Each structure stands twice: as C-alpha cells, then as structure tokens.
Length: 107
Image (tube, rainbow, N blue to C red):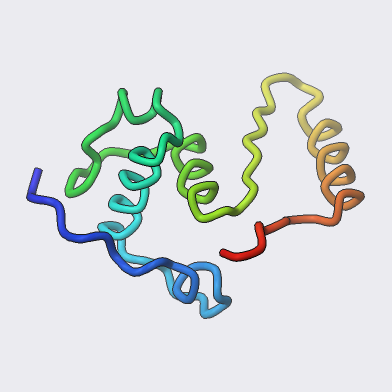
C-alpha cells in the first residue's frame, strides 16, 4: 500500500455537520486506522489492517468503530431469524423511547 499521509481533518463539518458532503474514501480509511490505533475494534484491525490505499471492504463493526472514535454512540444489530421485522420494530421503539441518536458533548 502507499505511504500514509498525515491524518485528515476531522469530519465534523463534512460528515456530521449536516452539509451532506461524503468524505473521500481515503479519509475514511485513514480515520478507521486512527480508530484502531486508539484501541477500537482490535479484532477488525487484526483482520483488515492496513486498510489505507486498499480496496478492502469494511463491515458494520468497522463503521461502528469509526463512528465511536468520534464520540458517536453506535449500536450494531443483527437480525438472523424470521421474526426480524418484529425485532426491528421493537428496537426502533426502544431507540425512540431513549431519545434517538446521542452524541457525546465536546466532540
């Protein structure tokens, strides 16, 4: 893989600031590596690192790790049986009762 550039700017205005801009893949790859360096998802790191400059696909755990590294609460939910729609409705109701998506203050 190519040599790693310095960390890109934080995505608060690009990804989470409501501007609807999608960060470049290279930025997201680098942020994921930085999340791994901070201790997020050591299993994913062992399986996929290095990711910068590659065409490797990531999954929900890597996406959650990236979001968590920015202080955004992320929950991974897997539906594996025929009752998936009922479970999804129950989870959506629980999230609605808890107040939806939460962000840590100071980020």
